[in-house]
Image (cartoon, rainbow, N blue to C red; front, top):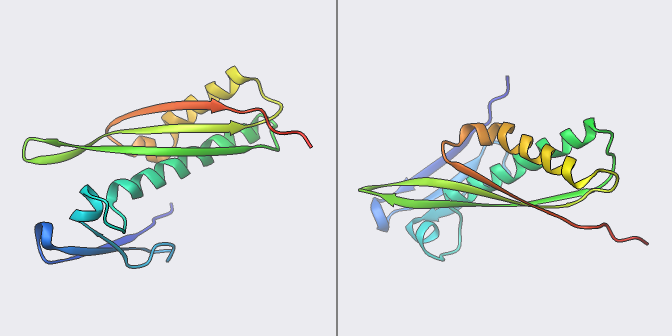
Length: 146
């Protein structure tokens, strides 16, 4: 079993408060977050952006392993994840995570790639964690030849 950690610190309360997020690996260190980064355009990060990064990374890695099992050894996968937060009464809820995949994968039929992508969407650990709608968009591109 593997456990990963992150720490959030918030000083002050509500809109006037300011926080920072640090991951256990050190990949994110004291990254600023607060009301302005979450609901505005202030520089920094926010939980939804970090969840989107986690979902994009998890899904893309799961798909790469599935393709490897199919004998695929070359290609490029790029996934943009977008999470949506909406107000529900007095609180908020992340209502969806949209995955937008661009795949350059020679040697696999488009239909099979889409099947593997749907399976990765349903079964990557972050997808299983999220209690929200998960939408997948797949875009395939033909690799450039030299």
